[in-house]
Image 1 (cartoon, rainbow, N blue to C red):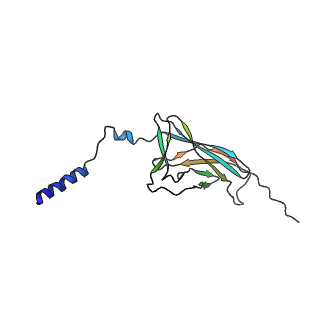
Image 2: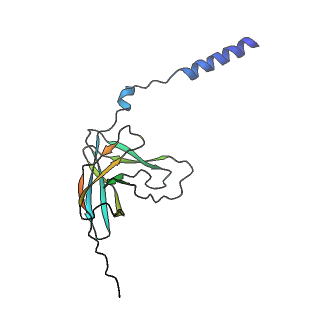
Image 3: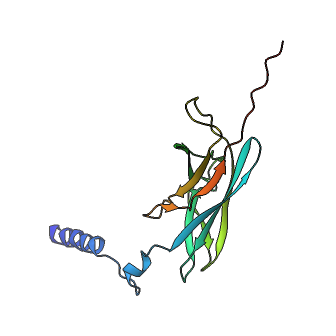
Length: 168
């Protein structure tokens, strides 16, 4: 009785420890897509809007994970402006039970609009000049990627806020 049970256990261990091989090269499956990002700015009186684009420079279609469970856009770009890091809010819905990753497909040599973000101008301390020009930079890191993507710098001019005269 011990011999069949022992051979059954050894057979199961051998089956579980053997790795499955496919017909494709495993290194070909793990190649990272060649992605680039850029931003476009629209300035308004009290806020500014950033349109964030992702471009696939590769010869094959790329996929990026932007959330899970159909809950919305969880992976958002982060912006750096005048020494401050600004993270836009994420407006999420209740996720589905499966929590499968949501993937956005980017065709080869194509560019897509990833998202539009409207942000208010940051509040500065008295030590910083309000009438200076400064640069806005953006970066994003997708969960299935090992590298952080940086967008080229854009000039953003702070609005001049006039202080209202004291009422008498």
